[in-house]
Length: 176
Image (spheres, rainbow, N blue to C red):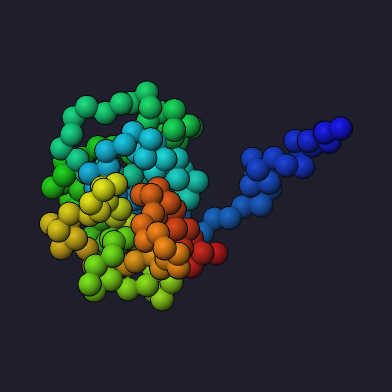
């Protein structure tokens, strides 16, 4: 016999309405930048993630013009219409970041630091890159810091949405 589920008890919506976790004001919230993200499912996943964390904005830096909006909408769920997101030219994302924001690349480079060894401000723009090649060199040069996510197992890469989730929730953890 399967036990009945008590939706009042298991409702995330209800719990988060009763217990507010406001770590920052929207004007001070993180910005997420996806550089050359190709998969509509990953674009939608990043929009949905931004909605859960309370990002100020999501920018998708690309020169691609054909975007499968139906697939993006399906994956992003309610974030499609509630999150401030847009496509910008590949070389234009930097101009959309406020001057008082620190720009951090989540990328493994020769000078990247462990994400867990840094204090992360809410006024941070987190960059994640192309599903195959990561963040391009021109975009990396525009960043204040490069951070890596330590990986203990034999696989040494994450899906772009997984990496962004770790980065944004590390910012949130620093502010709760």
